[in-house]
Image (cartoon, rainbow, N blue to C red; front, side, top):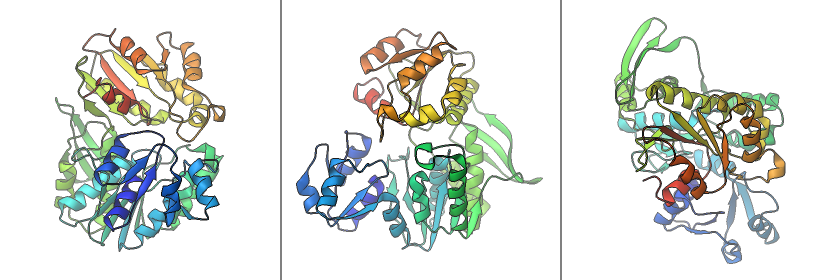
Length: 411
């Protein structure tokens, strides 16, 4: 939503918005003179030609109801993105349950480094400049494609990248079979498909002393290149493979791809090491699905050997916690000290699923060290009880990182 708002503003439109709370995203929009309200403003809706809603907005939302009463033209975010994408010759749309933000940003970085002047639409913020949108020329559009409410089906990509498909967004899809059907439609909408295959692999993976990653990229038995990334998680080797395949379809050379991938500095809150005056090793990671959390834990243990791991998890939506309960318990029970922070409800009410408190109560049977907290002060007091050399990892797609920065726990 924020990236599209910036694009519309850059095109000379008057743009305003509404959100439930201040965040890094709303602060970014203010830099573009886009006014964001946190209370209902009927006058902003009255003078709007179009009202754009994210899929998180329900029909009982006061802004949505007002727009309908005023008979405004209402479009969903995915529909607007689809219309925007039509002005580009080659759309690269990256979808999947995990890794799509990093893979999208990688492809953009390769094209940018190769002087192709691409346009970017990202579901996160680049570490380089804390931005999620770039308006380039009309040849290449690299976009993160979200499957929620079938938003990615508004796109007609030149290249569709599918990183993986796992059970997700059951509040919309209802069954995994329905989710798979939507991904099949996405495949059929593209000219070229990039997915995981056995022919291309990363071999001889090494972690350097600074935590960064290096590996050999092979196509069958042919070594293509040695990559030295500025990233650390092993999963980024597979993300590089997706980026490599997409960029080869766009006609880039191996040298251009290597340069772009090695220039890439990552995306915010993707296994991002952050500063904290209380601890030496603190990480923020966007993981909110059990598979993602498991991989983040694996990476942390591999990099920070023989150190206590304290994991603070803020569940994202009540329905996801309920739908994936067994998987969450399986992953979290083996953490040294799992701390559950109150659920980021996003678009839902608690009756839609299971709360962080309920997850904590269930998990406590498996891991006595588990605890639940509801506010920053309580969390800060618990964390200060750990030694300075413990590894503290905050995971989840909610507002906890913003709360930690606001209270100067992180800098």
